[in-house]
View 1 (cartoon, rainbow, N blue to C red):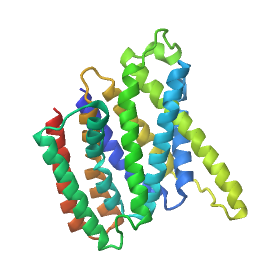
View 2 (cartoon, helix red, strand yellow; view 1 turned 180 degrees about the horizontal axis):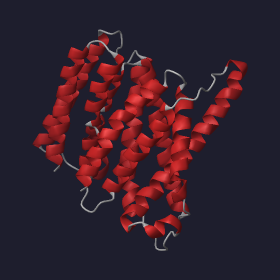
View 3 (spheres, rainbow, N blue to C red; view 1 turned 120 degrees about the vertical axis):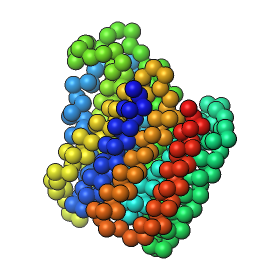
View 4 (cartoon, one colour; view 1 turned 90 degrees about the vertical axis):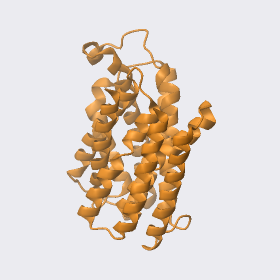
Length: 300
């Protein structure tokens, strides 16, 4: 069951990235993130039940990591072609696997080593294709933001693995939770409070930025892609949190499956935004998908 939840999350994430690219045409990075996250928080506010202070401190750190990842990712999305961003972000499972080895003592098998090699080759191919468009690793603000986004996302995934398994409520939370299956309690608690804290962080950033810029600040323009973004990420995250809370679920496999959202984003991005150098990026994407598949096989 959890593998199908992960696949559903991947599909929603693919469309989510397309919606974000469209939203950036009318608003700045922080406005898009704040509006979408605030709407998500409103959708999830019935699940904002009280919990142990320790859990809230852990979710605050998660919110910081996610805020960094989302902000850097949106900056990269504004500066780079979406086909480049989506392909590069698909490398995240490789870093999750590598850091799982370093932090949790996991070991790579032959399939996983081949998968890592394929992902590294895909990143090299992507760099070559992007260089023809004038974007180079290390010298492009967009790529630097993309690297920060991926690393913060990896840290968030590893933090999830560390904390969520330890979440349990000796006293029932009550409210809407009373009518829900027990296995939904932790996912909805984590998702609702994480989005709430992210909204607070983004609101502070937007206010501070507006005060600093004064009359020269960017103006917010309502866009119907904003609630669409909120609905898509709410659905994708809900499926993700439910999946990792299923008995027998494997975070490494779920992280890998969710990266297949890159195919949806790449194809739709190429068609809708008519981006260039698609052939070279397609080869990089194929290599990336092969690497992800090998990492998945090795993790089963």
